[in-house]
Length: 119
Image (cartoon, rainbow, N blue to C red):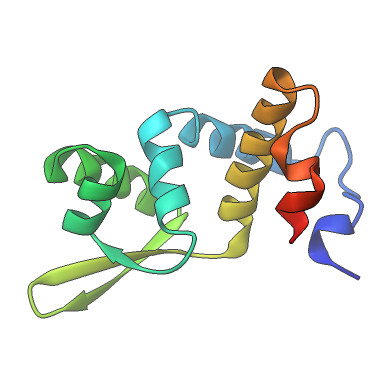
C-alpha cells in the first residue's frame, strides 16, 4: 500500500492536531514553500537555494533556521559549506499537495489531472 493512500486513524482530540497546525504555520510562507520545492530533488547549499528562490542568502538562512528547528530540513557540512535537505518525504508531499490544491482553485482541469502530466 502506498503511504499517501493510507487512512489517517487519529482521533479528533489527538495531540498531533496541534502539532499539525504548527507544521501548516511553518509552511504558511512563500519563501519557505519555495525552499521546500527547491529541495525536492536533493540537498543544496544556501547560496544555491538563495539563487533558486530569488532571495538573499541571509534571508534564506533565516528561513532555513526555522525549517531546521521544525525538523523539516537537516544539514550536512562539507568544509565551510552547509548543505540542506528535506528530513523526509512528508514535507515535500504536503507542499506538492498544496500546489495541486491551488491548481484546482484556478483551473477547471488542473495540470496534474491532465493526461500529458502523467507521461
